Figure 1 (cartoon, helix red, strand yellow):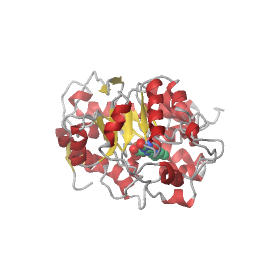
Figure 2 (cartoon, helix red, strand yellow):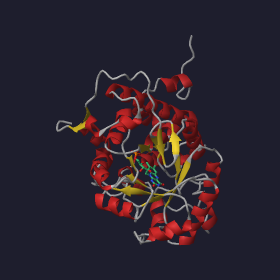
Figure 3 (cartoon, rainbow, N blue to C red):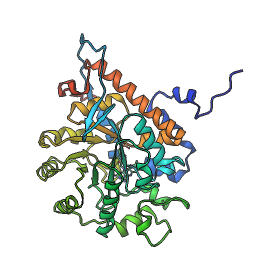
Length: 366
Ligand SMILES: Cc1cc2nc3c(=O)[nH]c(=O)nc-3n(C[C@H](O)[C@H](O)[C@H](O)COP(=O)(O)O)c2cc1C
């Protein structure tokens, strides 16, 4: 009699063939954590549209091209990555697995990817750095600017190679189930990076934390202040408008992440793939990345065809973590790599650099 497969056994993971299957398998998590990971803002129209936008674009493949040898690698922010997929910054990863950020950072390093650590991590940025691998640090700017300055100095000292400033959270979006659940970190977990600056060890709700600590007054002019704190490259995450992309390019930012925060902030903003199509001509050569709704290798191809150097993937890595920690996250990378490789070959390309916009057309019928 063969032994039944446990959900986390390597054989069971091999039988999970799509990222969607990981989403469906998350039922083990407590409801507040599941709701927090899944949530979009308000009616969740943008959350849904991020994914739908990829279906609106159809691939027009080239045939009779020798694709027997393919290179999936790309260069992002001076790092050679083994595929054009980065891990998006996400708070509270220990809600998915006890090893949280450490497990996901390890999976990213092993996959030849890049891990973006959130300010709101549940391990410290120094602990995450000890895993190794290329890493960037995402910042939210605090009302007490010295907290942000200190975090950036710590990130620089710990070997992070860029700062990602999230610009789409002047105030926190309304995620209805989080409000209903009074969502806060459970006892025993902390916003580890911020613990040294916080008098109370009591975990406030996320909404209360943002309302009391987060600086809603941040403006373009403040980029100068941020630049003065560090020599690290600066990426802006959360740009959707071509005029903002032009402003960012004029101010010499090192890169733009076209993002609507996974549909978690302002509802009814455009899907990020549509925003990327609008922004690419305005970016004046500033490197572009995209996140939001990437669930398939073909999605990665589409983002690259519209001008992104690479994509960031968020929730699917939390699903992988919830399923089987580092091994689950590694399987998510493996599926994306396999799908991307196959999509590249079937589109008639041998490398990431060959992907061109004429591969895509918007389909009215999608
Ligand atoms: C649970 C969760 C926590 C997040 N936390 C952060 C964060 O701390 N900082 C940030 O800039 N973005 C955060 N994001 C947004 C992601 O970086 C990214 O923009 C989004 O998840 C991409 O969409 P996807 O999940 O559809 O791939 C978070 C997203 C999720 C799902």
